[in-house]
Length: 317
Image (cartoon, rainbow, N blue to C red; front, side, top):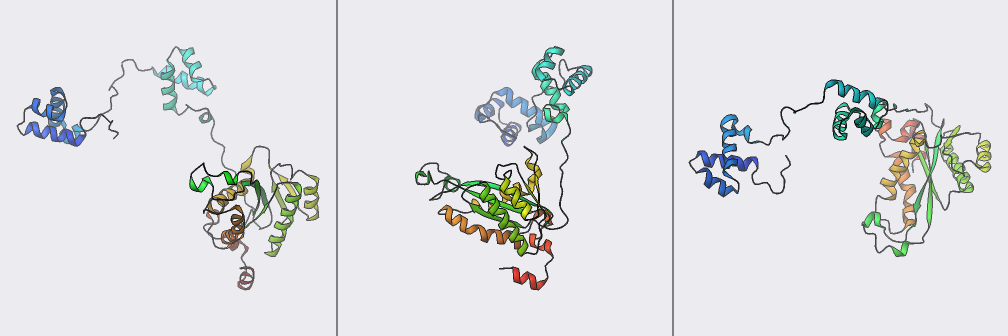
């Protein structure tokens, strides 16, 4: 119940008022004590006698019966025109109705939003059955800083010393099947950095016994470069690029970036961006070896490799 700020009586106050009147107090005196008129006192007393305590609850101000309800035939026409992608105002003008009436009808039909006219596209989930079958690569731009920033302190002032510190670029990679992730920070997102990160990522997965055969990236200029193409050929990789403006194709990398920002980049108040960078390898180790992953039935990504005990102890550090 939403009581407005000038309300004189709540349901509990109405009950006290009614009991005072039924106990012998004059309605005029009870009304004056409660700061309401005597007609209000008689109304609540009558409701209490008819319905008991339930009659003291708030009721909708909507009339029980509309004076001129919209005919069913008109409502059907409104729905048909809406499915032809007519706007609400155009429907109202065509049928001689008010825009508010058309809006209410469409809302009850569940057609008040354009996106409701077509069923939502079902999510397209895919997962390679073997680690290394596909790795997703992406880049996240982060600002450098020399002191704790406004994301932690909540204060926009006093950050002048971090202005002009520049940017750093977090290159991320995640395996489609196992969700084992790898990341490094570079000063830019040029083709040289992209190639260096690709080679480092392939080396990391090879150290875990994973042979990578495909790599997926977006359409950034560094990934469309000839140097990146040659690096893929040298590593015997098939390079796939996402469709333009379709981030869900590379959704595993996008989701990993969100997790990294929440649990690493903005998780604690790092004094400087250099200390944040130093913490990245430790967080990646925890992500791959110790953090339960929702899409893996709350198992760790490294569990997808089914490593023997000796190899597990050798690789864990």
